[in-house]
Length: 527
Image: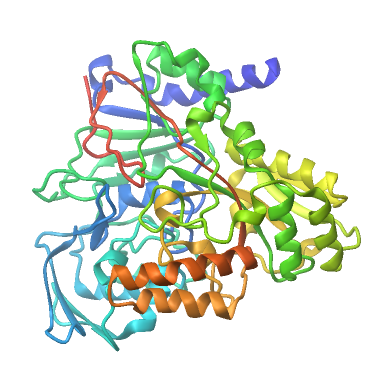
């Protein structure tokens, strides 16, 4: 452990030296951040992981966005109208929008971007199913024509749920949706300094001097995205003790969601702020690969639900219960679509029942591959608890521990586990991603294997989810919610491990940190 900390200290010193050359006064215009993980995938149409969303909102912009209460408000859109039959939406872009290379943002860029996004994202796929046509009218105006009325158009175009509908240049947006876009030329409030980028160590962004923010007050991801610093630096420092020391000394300014057991030295520091930012926190889960045995059998997925006690996972990952709670709701607790219907059998661990169900699923001791990371310590902690419980049930589990980027690159593989695929991974989701049948990427159980990694299939869930989304109003949706949730509890598309509030930590001289579903770096100033 001492050697790890020493290496971390040396590594951090080298990274921090990048910004230390500037005069002290100039450093007030540099926000130095320790992100939750290194950014490996830049394309937010391709990946739904949180660090990619954070990156995307710096570099790119979206047509609409979600405020703190998850209402959709316009961002790139100046004005829009809806025809009386609610089938044709006409959108006009704000004037002066342009990409970092100087090209104006046009309707052709928008149409190509949204069409690409709808091929991968659960919200986008649903919008595409209702769409008859999307076309550019002129450089600033485009139309979206529906096959039938759909009440989630603006909400979808502002999604901060799974993959985000960021607007790319038309040429970039024509990249195959299964291939990540490697460029990072957006129209957002920050510009990536690619020449300074050191993967695994350092990422730098500069203020986009050409960006024209909206005039409304900031609210979640909406409103005036005003950049108040000249530069944002991401310092990837794997050792938590080094980060805490750097934060105490003022060598870094903000730490994105550390594990709660890493907060000890900072809790009573008068120069440090520890707070919660997302409206519903995050939710832990274990996702299984439903394409391969044993989890292609629903009984094996049910076995996990009987085998696990949420309190074990949350205590290991988040310690003090003030940061977490037990919650058996696929659409998360304390959110608009909360229900725990059908969850009662799983509220108490039942080892004998789990063993019985594994046997009925045909499991006979084959090695199961659990991929995970310690780069995000909460995910690694949950994996350790999962592995211990699986072994207790007689499951031959192999943990493969790598960096988070490697885990993410392995997730899309549909190959058998012994050919580079996987059986399970632990993860956490933002509550805003999981809060409704539309946004929750894990409860999409479409049987065409275009749904989220793990690819569970259940026609009844999809029928109920479709009825929910076609319902004319919230009262009708609530009537569908309970049977939908009961069916999800039967099919177990992923195992619920508990709900928690991730802490965010920054120095007191940092003002204006925005509460919302994704961490953003506009509106922040330093004194």
